[in-house]
Amino acid sequence: MQEVRCGQCQRKLAMAEFVRLQIKCPRCGTLNDMRALSPQPERPGASTTKVCDDASKKSPGLAGWKKPPG
Image (cartoon, rainbow, N blue to C red; front, side, top):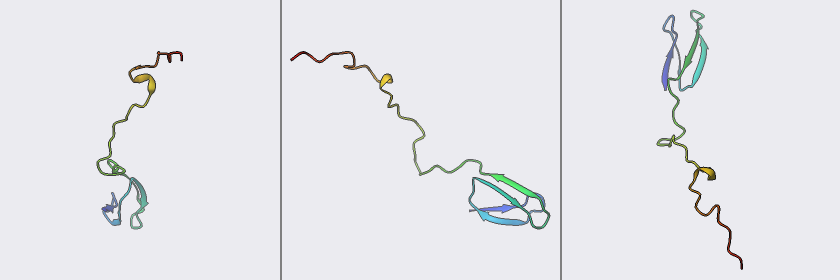
């Protein structure tokens, strides 16, 4: 958890985990708008590379061959 303080008067407003937070300080009335620097991945070690499943990008293999008669 991260400590959230007012940008104007430094009053502690909350302890939070957030992606985006908008909170008004009750002491000075400043509207504090905060964003996380980088969101946590969905799970630790998750791959960020995409796997290509498109058949047109794979090697043609037997795509153009016809089945023999019989």
